[in-house]
Structure formats: structure tokens, C-alpha cells
Length: 323
Length: 118
Image (cartoon, rainbow over all chains, first blue to last red; front, side, top):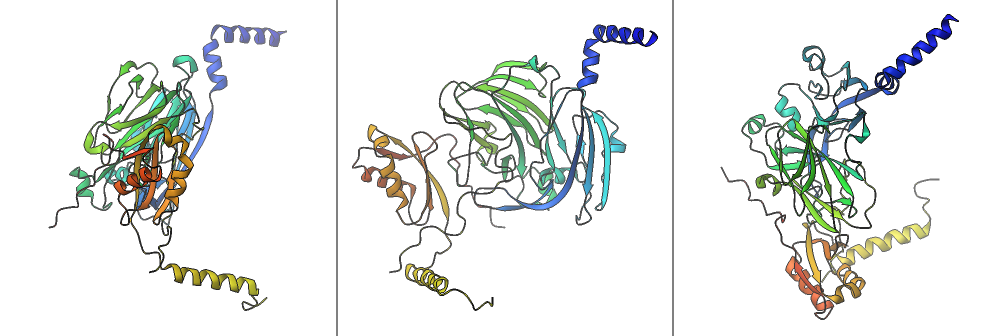
């Protein structure tokens, strides 16, 4: 009898605090493991390679996606084969920096746990010294914390993650990074990666009428991005990717290094809509992603062409007859 | 099976490939470029396959892509043929019924200046 009363009382409590109970019941725990990998990656359409430092061998690192209230148990491994210390700083976490974001040497592992309390789009990056070099060489990525209430913003028909970063030709020249002497600006680790008019370039796809949601992160390490859709207007911009921070009808929005925003655009008709940083020294040195709207658009991954494997022949074309 | 026990047809095929390569000449290192042409005119759509086939038969062409509406993206050896020559070729292939021009716009990437000499 007592247990029956307790059961009914429990039900009543849950009914009264339904939101809390639902949260407790649906929040998940994610085991996220990453490895620091010092490796070459392709950074342009001609197949040029760059001596990068990466998470999991790719630049940017993998997209982590959880829901508001979820717990992340994170582990970073720095293999003994590496040469340098590495670390991980998640902007989505609210935890002690000293304990959790310290650099670990090659051959070591670090683990920590955090709860993604606030919805949004957040940067993650290596914080080992000199941090400017670790970010410039590719140790960055995005974590999406979807809002617990999916109705908090309109449903997107198509989603892309774009991460802007600077390209320094000599990855060992830290002074050039402090002096802001970048040679190019990349989206998702490539110069003109989504520019179909450039050798080896691809594109982003959508269908006319679709709501395209761009999760945009600026990894820096130094330059601001002035993100603009040529031929369109952002229908909505969400600062830090939080549905509560909503702007409407925005032509250009500035995203600083280490920050992020979510951009929604409904492409009204078929055609091409380049997404650029309107800081033109950056756009014309690599930061152009062309969104092509066509009824035939196929589904695409969140970060297309990562890693970048060039589809064009690198060694041979139609032979020339001997004379 | 020893390494020498290769079927005769395989050896013949390999010899034929080597001979053909010698006859055709070596494929020198090349500078692969992508040229974007904007095409316009009612005949472009009708002559679409003819244009692409003709381009692909040209020396130094790696591939022709038509994924962007009203455009041709041509990967080619830039030392062999300019993009203006490719546009002229498309026009002449269709006897002027399909107009082609080099695509230039605000997102055209400029050739970057080489670093100054010390």
C-alpha cells in the first residue's frame, strides 16, 4: 500500500515538474574521443599539401552534435608518435580551465566531462602553446548543441557547417601568425574549396525554396569574418547559434575569431549564391563558397569535401601526338 | 607460379600499351586550370552534347563539367590553350548559334602576385 502511494505521489510530482522529468529522462551521455594527429592535408584544388596538426586527421576536426542538457565525456589522446603537446578547449563547456584544458605531451591522454547547458554553435580548439600556431595549423572544429525544444527555430531543410580559418604558407613561422601575414582564407580547411569556377573546387547544393542553415564558425586565429550571401539576404541570423539571439533580414554579419553564428537563408530561385566574407582580401584569397540552387540538388553531408580528395586527374591528361 | 609465368596475352597487351605511349609521346607535367564559360543562346541546349563531346576530344582537356546551369567548367592544360580560345572553339563548333564567353564576376579569383624578392 505504501509503495502504491509512493508511486502515485511520484507520478504527481512528475506531472507537476514535467519539464524537469522529461529533461532527466531524455538527456543523453555521449562518449567523444579524439586523437591529435600531426599529418599532411590537402588544402587546395591542385592537391597542395599542408603540414597540419589536426583532430582525428582532418581539418577541421569532426563535428560534435548533441542536444541541450546532454553530457559529454571527452577524451583526448596524444599518441607517442606525435612531436608536440596538444590540448582541447570546448567553448560549449562551463568547466575549470586549469584542470581540463591543460596541454598533454605525446604519449598522454586526458579526459573530462561537461554538460552542454546552453544551446548554440560553439568553437572547439587546441589550446597548447603557442595556441596561435595550433589553431592556424588546423586544430579546430565545431560543436552544435541543438535546442532541447526543436520548435525554438524553424526546421531547416538542409544544413552545412562552414569553418573559416587563415592559411599561413609556412606552418613553422609563428611570427607570421602574430604579424597577421596570412596567404589565404579557408572554408573547411581549403582555399576555394566550394568555388566551382576554380580548379578542383566543388560547391554547396540546395533546392529552390529550401531553408538552408549554415552553422558558421570563425576559427581565426586572427581575422574577423564579414559573412554575406551574394544575391541573397540572411533571413535569420542567430548569434552564437542560440535560437534566443535572433536577427531578421541581415545582409552581412560579423563573426570574430573564436565566435560563431547560425545563418538561415531561403533560396527563392534556381541559381548560384556565393557565401563570402565581405572582407575582400579574404574572399578573393579563398573564402568563397558557392551555394548552387537547383531542383536536382542531392543530399549532402554537414561538411562536404572534408577531407579534400581532389577529383581531377593529377598526373595525366589527353596525350599529345608526337610530331 | 613463377614471376616469369605471365600469360602471353598479358605481355602482348603490356607491350602494346608501352608502344602506344611511345608513339603518342610523353605526357609532360602540365598546369591544370579550370576555365568557366557562360553559354547563351537557344542552340546551346540543343547542341549541348555536341559541344561537350567536341571539347573532350581536344588535346589537353581533362574534363568538362556542366553542373552549373548555363555554364561549362573545363579543366584543361592552361599552357596549351587560353580560356578565350576555348570560348571561340565553342562558338565555332555551333557555327555561332551558341554564344560562349569567359565568366567574369565579383567572385573571380585574381592571380596572386608572387612574393617580393628579398
